[in-house]
Structures are given as structure tokens and as C-alpha cells.
Length: 164
Image 1 (cartoon, rainbow, N blue to C red):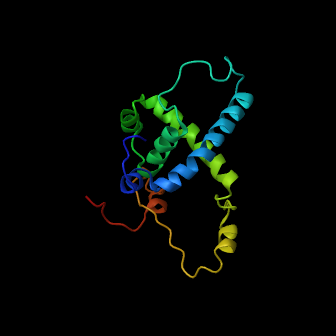
Image 2: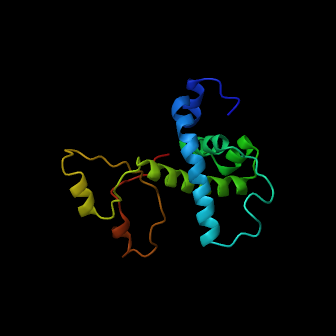
Image 3: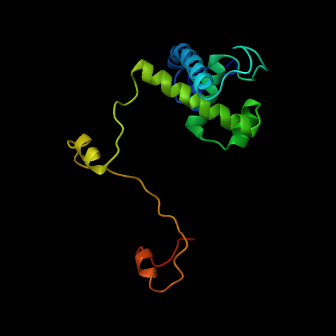
């Protein structure tokens, strides 16, 4: 956080301006604490008192939020993320997933998460009834075709050749 000098750099790394980032840091700290309390009470009992044990490299809520927003904006490999923040790849993975839960808890508490979760096509049509055109982005990927000649027509997509 100390190396970020201006709004432009903050937007490039996290997608947020400095004022929004600072406003989110305090509720995020409470969300991290609530997530840690929930994790230790449900998943496993604490081995040490709260605050005991080795101190992590991401100490402040601002560092944790920067780490998570950088990950969510750029989606680097965990090797790259760990090297950027001085963590091992496994710790980068664990931290990213735990902090994502904390961010979700924070955004839900602030009331900025969508109120809906779409589970079926009928529900999606009801939610987007007033939208004239709904575009869905998809990528066609090659996959292994069936070896038996009778099973091949079901796999045929209409494409003649794979693009090089």
C-alpha cells in the first residue's frame, strides 16, 4: 500500500480509486474478523488463542484488501501472485480464497451484492424479462471425439477444421 502513489496506479492494480479503497478497508477488516471467527468455530477449534502463532506477511486490512483485489482484477497464477506479495504459491491460494469469503461477507453486510442467484433458465427469463437482447459469451473448445462411428454424429458441431 505504501508504494501506490496515485489514483491511476490504484485503479490499474485493483479497479478502485484510492477513496473507494480506503472506504472499503475498514468494513473489510470487520469482515475478515467475522470470517475468521466463523471458520474457527465451525471448521475446527482453535489450537491457540486468537492472535497467537506466526504472523503473516499480509498484516493490515489494507494489505489484505490490495492482495485480494489485485488477484480478482488480474487473475494471475498463484506462483505469480505469491511472488508479487512475497508468499508461497500454496499460501497465496489459501489466502485468496479465504479473503474472497471475507470480501463477500463484507459486501453482503454493506448491501451491495446482488439480491438474486439465478438457478434455472425460467428464473433467468423472469429476471431479464425487460431486456430485449441478452448476449452470452462462450468459447468453443476442442475435445476428444468418440471412437465408435455410431457415437460420432452426436459430437459433431458443424465445424470442418480446428483453427490453428
